[in-house]
Length: 295
Image 1 (cartoon, rainbow, N blue to C red):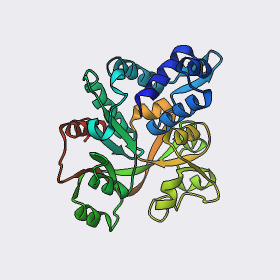
Image 2 (cartoon, helix red, strand yellow; image 1 turned 30 degrees about the horizontal axis):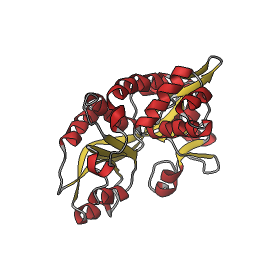
Image 3 (tube, helix red, strand yellow; image 1 turned 90 degrees about the horizontal axis):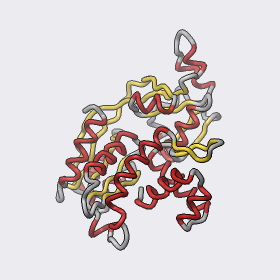
């Protein structure tokens, strides 16, 4: 997420049109559309919807715009000519897990009046994030430990510490009006009759571990790259997905239902470099994150 992307959101909201906003921002329309799409992919939300009245903010988009308006008032002047390595105060890596980004927003809002605010975050998962910490490319990683035999050894070798916060389990995500939910008894075996929506990289990497073999028909598979694409497909079709827990507010906003189905659990926690420790910003972020996950 960048300051420019927040500017783009506010300008499209103001004009109600991508083409009009592109003109005022001196951008091409495709470049502006791609910037918004990339932001939606990163945040895992849909920001705008097309209506007869033009481009309108969704419920999630309205929350984003409200916070962006407040933040932009104080930080526009600090974005040019600043070296990320020298001046970035907090660098977060998180998986495709909505509460992790919501906590980042909480932190940004808390510091929105700073004269030189410069935080950054990006999506990443897997053991390569241990090396990113070791190389000082980030300060904190929200991590989902799957029981990999090499993970503990890698952390030890690179002097990175994993702190477990809680166990999390998997849920089946369906549209709230899905036919299976209209039956007196929800039979999970019937999911084989419906398409499965997955993140392409995670499905290929963890196909032998994740709990979808028994309920997924490999001939009915839809692979996507973003959380927003996944939940949009699920909420507007008969497809289903397998997700980590979201808040009831998130489910209601996207018109989906999450049903626990597998006893297998992941360890949700965070990684930090032992030599540098946790910065004050990282500690404060973790407090927000713990609240978001009801820790």
